[in-house]
Every structure is written in structure tokens, then in C-alpha cells.
Length: 363
Length: 190
Image (cartoon, rainbow over the protein chains, first blue to last red):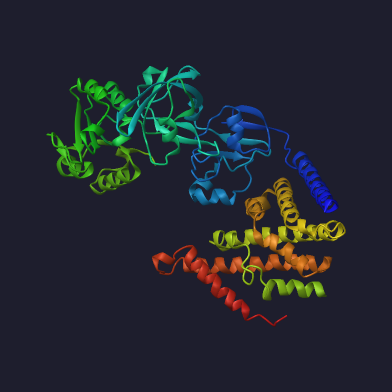
């Protein structure tokens, strides 16, 4: 019995050693692309270690490119124009890129590897993206399912973002502890700079929301950002903001921005919720209401006895009673994807051009 | 000569995908269009031939002389994983074009049971080296033939009106089953 155990161990050990050696050699000689030059926007040259994905390489160099899927090639946020050195398109890219994008040399930076000299175009707004560490300063339950979390920036000590933008908060996946990233809109004013707030709705089995709900004062979080194009268009048209539930979050920076930057623009906030207890952000709304240009229309869909405001589903009420007088306005929508999709479809059906509809969906 | 017979038998009459139903995961998942299926098939053929040859040598010169055949599974799997890894690195280095066409499939193949199946069958059937290589190439080509044919069928099915509940993997499994029955017709040919 003993000899066979020893022989087995020796054979397995020998094979493992031999294969390990082969892999180590292959890694050294085949995967080593040496130091290569990465040219960004035609003017900035970086010397980087070759062999990794473009996304990772840029990340190492502190260039943050939006990415939500963790480099799996599914979210397609990390698209960049690579004019030289990317090689042929990979099957994983062909799945998500359109023919027009491929004609313009758009690549998925998480799939493309840096193997030699490469020229890449990074949009100017990505230079503003950074990685931040912050600690929880205040957590407040604003409705039975929504917490408002305020973080104080630690490193770097301040953040610059545009009203309506979001960040990707890093949360540990249960079990593996692997980092997952979830997008949350800033629900505080950009001018605060040293603190940011988020409105987090507790989702059943939600990895990030469960993690964020469990944080205690002083706990650290990491996030990257700011990202997003859900910004005030500065078109001068009146703004209609349609929000449901936690979809109010980006409007808490966006509405003050509109009111301040365009004193002539009227802002209408239609806020859909189930019962009175689900309407939050009262203090902010009172503040905005001091401006006569701001109009607040809460709409409740659930049973609520003591309520003399609008009743019914937000989209139904809006299109039945209010749309007529807002046909020429600019639209800002935020809420669950199904709500935003159906609102967008209905607005387009009623003749609002797509360019006047801005939205922020959360999954 | 014997090696050639084994090759053709493995491709047509004993098709690894259609008679043994091995390697089903990529067979269903990567058979949406002919071009991708072809890339996958090519990668499988390459890996199958190399790994079965390497495993033959290990079986013959290491496992049998030392009487440790019971380690077959674990060692074959490790060898397959290492070979796919090295192959991926090498292809990426020397031929970016080839890498673009089937490099991404190599990682999938490391855990493809058809590859392990071929190594195990090779031992069961007591093949010599040349027969083993023929068997590896033949099985790979057979698997490629099956997946490319299935992809061709699926491209056509895409445009037909099939019940909603059968769309996707459902109708694919049925098509594969019918194809397998058709392949029985080749029995006795070799």
C-alpha cells in the first residue's frame, strides 16, 4: 500500500513540477511583451508594461475608464477609439460593437491587449474620473426602504462632479468577497465638494445595497467616478423632471443646478411614490420651493387616506392631466428601467423628439 | 493505414459529439453562427490532437510503468489545462489574427469534456501512437463537422417560426438529436 501511495505522490508531484516549469517559461517568454509605448490622444506618451488589457493598463496609469462588468466584455462601457496597435477585432468585441463603431476603430478596452505600440483616444471627460476613498459620516432612513448615506471624502479630500452624474461604488460580493461595482447617483450638491450623499434603496438580495445598508458611521468605502451624461442640457426650455422612488437622487443635484444656472427656466418635479411615507427629500424640496420657478407635484399610487394631492400611477396621471401644457418642454427621467422605458416610449409617441428626453436608468 | 481508419471512424461513425454526446456545453452555446462554430471547431481539433498525443506519452511512459493508472483523470485534466494555457499564450504571441478568430475559445476548451473523453477513450481502446494521433484529429474534425452543421441549421431556424417555448437551447437540442440519428446511418461504413 505504502509504495503505491509514494509512487502516486511522486508522479503527481513530478508532473505538476514539469507543467509548472513549462507554464512559468511560457509566461516568461511568450507573455512578456516588454515595455511598450502607449500614446494617448496623440500627444501624451506613456511607457507601460505590455501583456495586459488596455483597460487594466490605463487603470494602472490612473486613467479611469467607465466599466461596470469587471472586464467581462458585457457592459460595453469601456469603449475607446484605438487608432493603432489593437490588432483584429475579437469575437467578444464583435458581439457588442456595431458595424459603424468598428468602422471608427472603436474597441472594447477590456478585451484589447496592449502588445506593442498603441495609439488610443480618451475622451476629455474621462480625465476627470478618479478613484476616491470616503468614510460614512451620516446614515439616515428616509423612507422604510431608502437610506440616505453621506460620506466625507478622505483620499483625495474633495470631488468635482457635474450635477446629475453618478459614481461606481465598490462592494464585496457575499461569499467570495470579490469586488463588484454598482452605480449610484450623487444626491448632493456638487458645490459641497468634501461630502457626497447617495440614496440607496434596499433591494432583496442586492449585493451593493445590502452592503451599503450595513455600513456604520466611520466605515470606509471606495468608489470611482464621476460618470454619466444625465446633465442639464442648458437648452433654455422648461424642465420636466419625472422621478419615481429612489429615482429622486440625481434630481437633488440637478434641480438646484437648473434653477441656479437658468433663472428663467421653470422646473416641474413630478415625484411618483406609493404612500406618503415613501416621499422623501422634503427639506430639499422646501428649499427649492422658495424659488417661484419650481413646482412640485407628488403623485401617490397606493391607498392613502389623508391626501389631497394627485392620485394614481405617475405616468398615467402625468399624461392624462399635465402633458398637454408641457409638450414643448425638456424631459429628465429617472427611475426603474421599466418606468423610464415606458415613459420614454410614450413621450416619443406623443411627438417629443428624442433629443429633448434625458434619462438615467438604474437596474 | 490503421491510423487513417481510426481517423475516419472518429469523424463519421463514432462522432464524439453525436454518438457520445460529449462537449455539449460549447456545442449548444457556440453554435449560433457558422463562422464562430468553425473557429471553435478548429480550436477543439488543435487542442484535442495535442493533448491526446501528450496524454498518450504520459500514460505509456509514466502511468503504466509505475502502475499508477488510477491517476489518469487528475493528470490528464492538469495536462489539458496546461497545454491550452501555453497554446493560448503562443497563439496570441505569434499570430494575433489566429488569436482573434479562435483564441478566446481556448479557455473554454480547457474544461470541455470531449477533450478529456478522447484521452480516456484512447486508453480504453489501447491505441498505439499513430492511431492516437489519428483518433485525436478525427475526433476534433468530427466535433467540428457536428458543430458547423448544427450552426448552419440554427442559422436557418433563426428565420423560421418555432413555438416560443422551444426557442434557443430547446430547438437546438432537438436538432442535435435528429442530427445524431442521421449519423447512425453512417454506421457500418467503416
